[in-house]
Image (cartoon, rainbow, N blue to C red; front, side, top):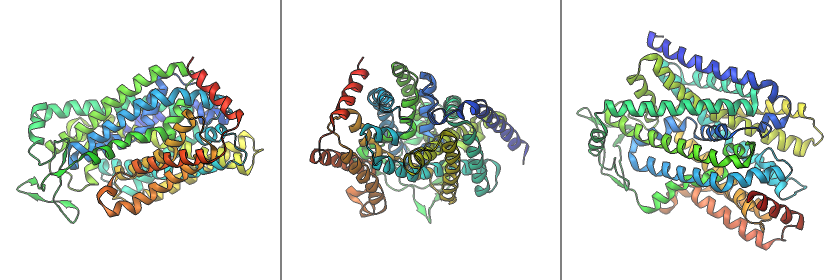
Length: 520
């Protein structure tokens, strides 16, 4: 290991020690009960809620996946995705947050998303609970895998070491940390990690613009590539066996592709995913007072807007400064790492690299915690052993967390995995499975248990069918699977709800109670 690499390692090591200390500090309180372990006893303030929600949501995808897309094909794909995400973030905080916080509390004090949906319809056979828990286990395995891929790529790039060993090392660290501290440690560290991510993105953006000769120079150079700096066009790298061709020291691009209205709507549909993201919805449920969500919404929206803008522009600047440095689609996701290590002294580069580590840890601990709760709290205690005490549930939770992490590590074992692709699939899965179910459960009192079951199954299954089969047909079927799956889920909820027996008076009365409470 060179002197520069050692300094980077020291800076990142100090950061990881801080994260571990946070886990230890909260360990005792987390182990007092499952409510504390999974939801922190609904004790989080508005700033921690906002920053933790966004940090756990964005993951290493924000610092590697999104800049990688901008570096590879230019502005359009990345910026329309970012716009969709920003709109989705704001609308989710505006409409869903307060109602879900109050409803989850009133409906049996639910501490997980499956438990809320089950309590909302007063089900006795726990069908919704089981389906929701199983989908969470499935899609969060992919999500956790994307985080492990990020860690593997980061450390193998920085230290010229094996991707596999670094991926496994990162997974072990995240698992040990999450096992100790639970939700409180995860939320507290996510607040710190959101700040680190923000610092890393803004600093790299500013220094990148300066190195590229200013904003006008960046724009002028980016426009030299056909379709690269366009909202309604897209660059097409000329490839040979998956690697971009270089001629005369410059990367070769084909003619600009078209980026039409259907593609824009499809890309912006990323925003729909927010309504079904368990890691975000759980933060809404965990705030101490619903009245504090207004401040949280403002903080989260501003953080999200600046961070997404910075990530997209970093990818554009990276292509201008280092046009031939990263010649494959998977390698392009290292542009943030490449720029940071090129711009900054090793110690500072280590701090900036901690931004990627922060994004990865803040997301993977959320994913593992929620997935393990889906099994231990919802399946084990909710169905298999209803008389299990808190200590038993916590032990089962930790065992489940370890097993899920192993599955995620196996999924992440492919070194050529593309972070953006893995995240987009899991994002669509959650958005289509839970988004319509949550929205209709919160805002339409005619929604029935059967309607929600049908909608969840239709949305979740359609994500797989569209991604693995229908998308291969091309044309209109090439759109992002979230949008059609979300729409189909909504249709199933409405149709089946209208065809089945109306909700009981008890369910309707509780709905009206929550509605009135939310409007106070």
